[in-house]
Every structure is written in structure tokens, then in C-alpha cells.
Length: 330
Image (cartoon, rainbow, N blue to C red; front, side, top):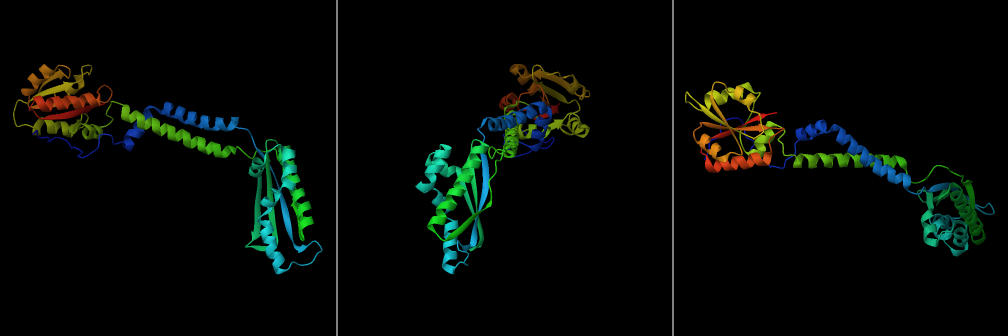
């Protein structure tokens, strides 16, 4: 069992952990791509709203008087009936005598008419006094929405006046409203922004999980299960030089990727007997590693592949008894 005394090792850390630092690193590095993805998500959602057919609405208010058609105050029974009528306006409007005329006006079938005629009763805690109903008609043109609302209100007043004592009046006439009722663009803007952000975060997560590089010293330790030293940390380099072995002539074998320039790392260890061997030269690595006091695995964020590094560690553990640490180079 090799002793791993140098540096610190983050134990029990999953290989797939994603840290805030990794996210920030990718956001900084791929800033323009992330912005482009956000704009793409925003554009797809808002673009879909622009091609959707616009729906317009016209709104009016029916007022239920506190007296009957002759001006007499309502009895308690009549007030109770009034409440029932207020909450059943839409049901009443769907009667054949009214709905047939509205369907001829709009070209809707009965179900479509039901969906496009919105009735909102308003009462004061169930009190029949000063109660009213909002009538909102929807259509594909502002004029049609206005006609639907006006016709529905007029037909309701005419029929209810014939059949009951209730005095219903138009408190607010519907108008032609040129502003679309749907799509509600500010909702699509918010959804588009959320979609863009979600897509960009998905890109960042995929980028981190598929990126073969190790971003930071802690990432290297957690993934490789190996104590790793930052090449810029003078105190840790001193620890390697003077504390790892008591031998006067210390031999270090640096294992590196084939295309990794080792000049900088070797210069940091000029007072040691340092040799370097490529990871693809397994025989040479085994020969030099057995004769070394310490193996140093060179880790470069830009050129090292974390899966290949882990495979190298497994090979070393199997073939070479020499202790091993990592040195992280940006």
C-alpha cells in the first residue's frame, strides 16, 4: 500500500461532482456560447408566440339591481334567487334560444362558444345587493370579440327580463379592444428568458461532464484519488523536496502526456535528480519508476485527459511500488 503523505486528498468525493468553481470557469471560458444559447432559447419561445394566432377580447359588465322590474325592493327569497341567477349566467347563455344566435354570429360550434365566452360573477360575500357579472367574449378579431360580448349581454337581458322579475342592466358597455388578449407577450418573455437560462445551464453541465480536463487542484485530487500539488505553491514544493525522503540524492521520475512540455516543471525541481518519461512509453515508465524515490504525475488543464490520467495511475499502482503524487500545471 503506497503512502500518500504529500498535499491534501479529498476523500469520498464522487467523480461526477460539479462545483460552483467549475461552473464559473466554463461560464467565463464559453461566455459568448452561453449568451448565444440564452438568446436561442429566448428566441424560440418568443418566436413561437409571434406565430401563434392572436385572440382578442371585449369586456362588459351586467349589473343586477337591488329592486325588481317594477322598482320594488327584493324579498329575501328573491335575493337568494338573484344569487343563483348571478352564478348561472353562463349556463343560461348556453340555452338554445341565446347560443344559436351567438353561434351564427361567430361561426363557432357550441363547445367553442362555451370556451370563448367567459363569465365572472362578482358578489359581496353572497349578498345579492350591488352584485354584477363580467362578460368577456373572445375572438380572432377585435370587432368580432366586441360583437360577441354585446350580443350575449343584450340577449341575456332580453330573455331574463321576459322570464323573471330580475332587473338586469348594462353597467359598462363593451368596446373594441385592439390589444390582443393572447398571446400575453410579457409571459412569453419571462418563459423565454427562463428557457434560455435553463438551456445554458444544461450546456454548462454537459460541457463539464464531457470535458476531459481537470479545472483545479481540488478537482484533480477528488477525481484521481491522489495528493496533488500546485506547481505555483512554493511551500508544498519545498515539502516534496525536503520531507518526502531522507535520502540525500533524491530521484524523481516525472510522468507526463506525450505532447506536454516539461521544461517548467523540471526547472522547479533543479536541485533534484529528475527524469521524465511519457505516459505512452510504459516499459520506460516502469524501468525509471522502480529506480525513483518519487513519481510525479504531470497534470495540465489544457493538455491532460483525466480518463487517461486515471488509467496511468492504475497502471503505476499495478506495476510500480514507488509512491506517487501529482503536480498541477495550468
